[in-house]
Amino acid sequence: MLCPQCDMLVALPPLAFGTRALCPRCKTTLSTRWEEPRKQPIGYALGALFMLLLANIFPFINMRVAGFSNEIRLFQIPQVLVADDYASLATLFMVLVQLIPAFCMLAIILLCAKVRMPLVLKEWIAKMLFQFKIWCMVEIFLAGVLVSFVKLMAYGDIGIGNSFVPYCLYCLLQVRALQCIDRRWLWQDIEPAPHLDRSLKVGRTGMCQGMRSCHCCTAILPADQTHCPRCHSTGYVRRRHSLQWTLALLLTSFILYIPANMLPIMVTEALGSKINSTIMAGVILLWGEGSYPVAMVIFVASIMVPSLKMLAICWLCWDANGKGKKRADSERMHLIYDVVEFVGRWSMIDVFVIAVLSTLVRMGQLMNIYPDTGAVLFALVVILTMFAAMTFDPRLTWDCGNETIKKEPKGDGK
Ligand SMILES: [Zn+2]
Ligand SMILES: [Zn+2]
Image (cartoon, rainbow, N blue to C red; front, side):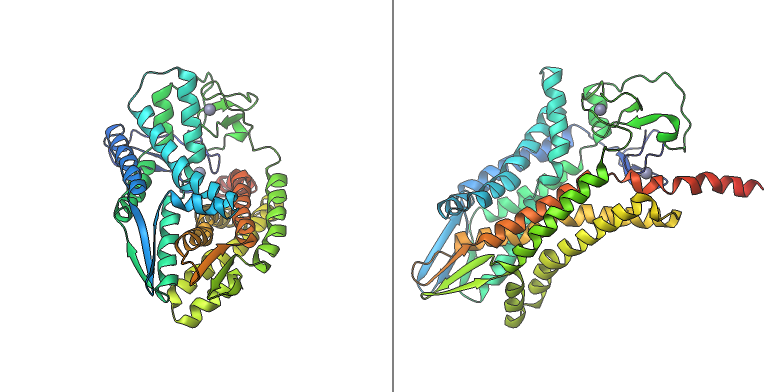
């Protein structure tokens, strides 16, 4: 198969149970063979769906301050946000924490259980499953809840409700179910890969052999064939205008990033006085109160990661544009790309913290927290940078290195 990250053609040996195949050039996991490729994901996914149901039925967390108390359930979070005219944040919560993960779990069950349905529908579900995978932010929401606990501990007693434990289990099962799904295996299971009539050389890139890999189902296709016969997605040898798109998205997110940091992300109303707090002010407040670890988490997740991520993507684009020409660079750039892809989602923590705080802290005249414009902008920044990282074609970083690889064996022969 062609490595999706560096376009190297790799011959996959038959894998033993529980082992993974790594790309020899970029060390990306190409395929994993699970012992029970059907039963395991179905079990985890069913468990996750059941836990999600439990998590929504019972009270999630509660808070008591000087006689006032407030208890919330998970589904109340969007309700309160909509009532505050922050439908955008409510939608974000519903979609990222509940709908998309639930859809993915359902998709895993349907696909692995070999439920009888039209092939077109099956292909569509599988395509959506892999596209939605990185938008499942269940574990990030959990981290957000924990951060809010620490933030609120100074003000009153926080208690966990009956659905908190099911939610944690939902989070674990969901992550595990997604982990157990192997893209190559699943597509092979839906439909065998299209037949190839030419012989290919292992250890060389797909591009120099006139081949491309389908970004969706990993099938190897001739370079001039833009339509994949298996998953019906269109693709090219390299993602078209990848750098332009990435830079455009990056620029937009950078422009939004400035007001997101200047405008208040939430308003705290305590005993009649209003305090607007920006992201930085929140960090300083936490630091001042002595909760250093949480202050660090928020600082890293909301300030360092987004700005470093923008810089990193810029650097990746600049490098892919052909200015860096060393092979060592490709490996380093690839590491940066991996980190950027993995870490980017975690910036959402702050948005979820605001969602939890503004739902939980409704104590009438005593204390109220409302979200503010900055939070919406910040969420947009995170989403845009995630898209920017997605539109970036990682194979471009390896293309510059190509010449050097071809030269190396020659050098040895002399
Ligand atoms: Zn590779
Ligand atoms: Zn395909």
